[in-house]
Length: 423
Image (cartoon, rainbow, N blue to C red):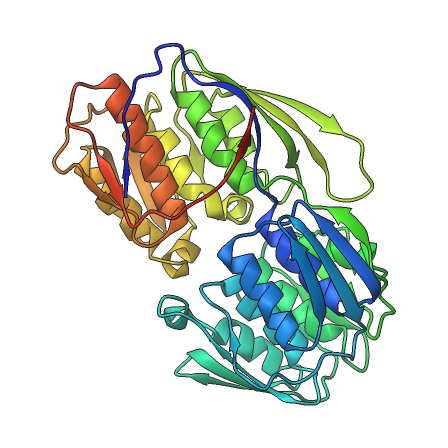
């Protein structure tokens, strides 16, 4: 539980190094494992989800050493994974579950995936069905975990994705590496492209057409271990971007943040809402990175539709918070994917925001928020719904409340932990 105290009359100031990018940390383990030679990952995110990925590949016969945020992976090659004697525990990580499904689908052995109670409620047919089109044999439990994958020879496909999901796309790409011929996948909308970028860095042959949504994967690549530094996580940086924008007299700098255009949706939205952001990009051959400086700003309302959602899906709770302090009515739609995250984030946002009197209307695929309506507290016990995105959003909301309004201090329950390096 978090209770917010103190009033920073001088605003928020300082320089921070946010944790490593979760998506890239996951993929670094996976691609390092199926490469030949050694892969070194620096600034690896030591979150429970990423450690689930690390542990799973150790169970699959990959030697991996970790010293805090430094990880060394001794790759076994594309076909070197070995059967685990025990079920592979995915913990709470949907990314681990869906991506590893693509890799295990083409093996010569059977694997069983299990997870915690929350993960076991999340839909898995969205990945098992398209993998089945490639010849994968996957048995779910009523569409959920536990899930058993019986490795088989995979064949090439041309497949149009039914959901805008980087996890599903990545699972198909990893499966296509093991197919008999090239495969082509067509997305509904462009989603984060970390898998494509990293696969190329490791020596894979994958191309994206000029339409931005058609991806072709060449099978049976010779992948080679790499040395790389994981950029700062944009989703983690987002909390501080929003805090600095809302708390008066603030100015903070975030160092070496990943600036992949498929992940900068919140940055773009904040700028459109009148946010004060300075970007100092750094030259790089891999994922784009740079320093961000954010200052307090008066915000305008915004309208966001389905085309923008993939690039900001994880930060939409924070977009809702920005909208709650904007001078007008904001509308966010096309975000039905929020319903199947760690919790139903649309319902959770509406429920918790209403406790502080925020004028928010729930839609099937988003919400409408009028930031002009004065807040009035009805309940100071805010719930994170066992979801770190909701928890951190509520901490920022409660922090603003306690420092600007004369009202009882809200608390946030079921709150997860994040660690940051600050100066």
